[in-house]
Length: 410
Image (cartoon, rainbow, N blue to C red; front, side, top):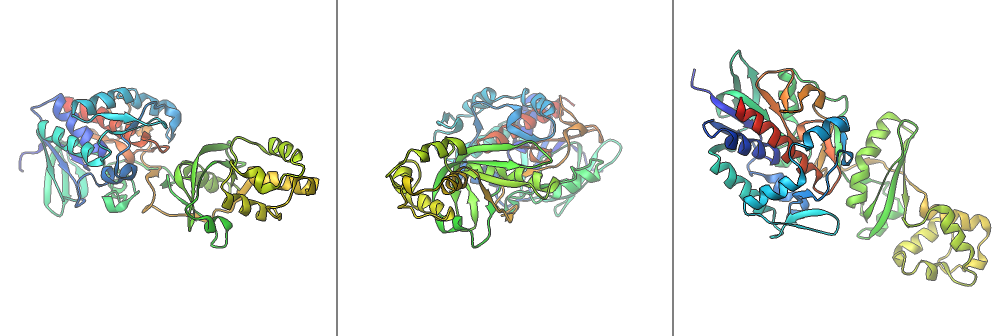
C-alpha cells in the first residue's frame, strides 16, 4: 500500500480551504491534500454576493441560523468569530469594508480577491490541491481511509468532509457528500431542501406584472405547527414570483412550515412601518385626498395602483368616498396580503441547503465524527443554514477552522 497522506480534505470551498489552511498552520509537518471535483476552484465563493463575496457580518449570533440547536451552533461559532475572520483576511492582505446593512465585503469589491488570498494561504501552509479530482467514495479501514475517484485511489489517515450541500450544483456541491457521510455511519435530517431560494407565484398573479420593482416589505409565515416568523428587508418582484433579501430569508422557514402544516401561509406587508389598524386610522383622515396622492412618497406608483386594484378600488378614489368596509379591506390588502406560493426555484438558484448531518453526531469542540474516528465534517454538509448577509460564510470559516485545527493535532 502506498504511504497515506496525513489529511485529505474533500471539497475546496470556503470550509474546505479554511480547514486545510489551519490544519497546515497547526502542524506544518502534516501532508495535506485537498480534493476538488469542480472544474473551477472556489466557484461558490466567486459567485457569492453578486461576485463581491460577502465574507461575513459585523455581528453574528446563533439566532441568525436554523437547523441544529442554537446552543450547538453557538458553541462552534465561538471558536472563530467575526472579528477573527476580519483579522484573518487582513493578515492575508484582504481588507474588508462594512456596509450599512452590517455586511462585510473586500474593499476591492471582488470575490476573486478573497479566493486568491485563501489559495495563497493554502499554498503557504504546504497544502496540495488536486483539481478536478471528484471523490466517488470514502471507505474506512482500520488505520486509514481509502478515497476512490476517477483519478484512482488515495489513502489518508484522516479525512475532512467539506463537500457542501446541494445548492448551486454547478459549483460542485451536488449532494454527493451526503452519500459519503452516510457510508461512513452518519445520518441525515429527514428533510433536506433549498434555503435562501426565490419563491414562485401563479403565472396570473399581479406581482409578476411588477417585475423589476424592489420595495421594502415584511414577509411573515403563519402556521399552526410553528411560531410566526417574519423578515423585513427589500423584496424584488420578478417575472416568476418574489426574490431579494426578504424573500430569500423567509424561504426556508416557509418551506419548512409547509412541510409540517399544509395550511401554512405566507403574508406580505407592503408598508412595514404600518399595521392594519394604524393604516386604517390614517385612511379615515384622508377626506378629499385621493388614495394615489396618499400613497405617494410611501409606495411606488405602479405598486400603489396595483394594490388599489387588488382591493377593488380606483387609485383616484378619495378618502370621503370610501366605505368602512372598503377602507378596512384596503388596509388589509396592503398590510396582510396572503401570497399563494406555488413552489421555489430549486437548488440551481438556492444560496444554501437546509438540512444535512445533525451536529449531535459531531464533537463540537473539534467537528470530529462521533460515528467514524478520524473523520471531520464542516461547512454546508452540516445541518446549519444562516440568513442572507455573510452568515453562511461565517459558519464555513468557524466550522472549517475548528475541524482544521483539530485534524492538524491528530
